[in-house]
Amino acid sequence: MQITGLTLADSDDAAALWHSAGLTRPWNSPEGDFRRALDGETSTVLGGFDDGCLIGTVMVGHDGHRGWVYYLAVEENRRGQGIGVQLMAAAEDWLRDQGAVKIQLMVRTGNEAVIGFYDRLGYEDAAVTVRAKWLV
Image (cartoon, rainbow, N blue to C red; front, top):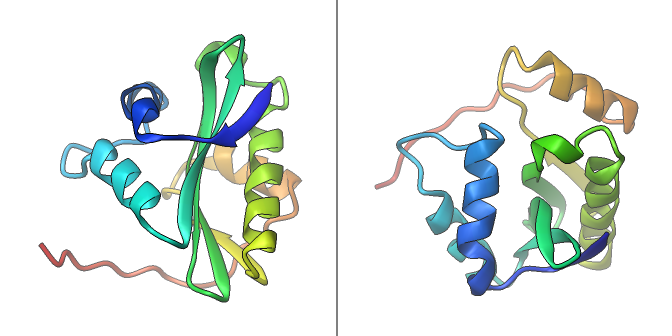
């Protein structure tokens, strides 16, 4: 697998992967999220390719201190092969290169399999509650 930064030309493939992985919600445009990540100076979307096909993604960004990870997704038939681990390593490297000193992510309540995945990578419960408010 080759991991590289995605471009706007990859937007549809990334959004399709996110839909199939169950990461999208009807009120949130994954294509809009993709565009905003690429437009930002402190964010990007990394993609894993095998034989020219997008098989995994991870969106990364930072605020100068904390790095954040979103949209970690792997094609269903490729899960369990270490692709998610490789994408997370690439995300951590990207954030480290950007000067981030900490990485954070959110997992939807009840998604125990994903929490177990991150536990195995050394991520811990930060004992915080996330609050949200729509601005648009």
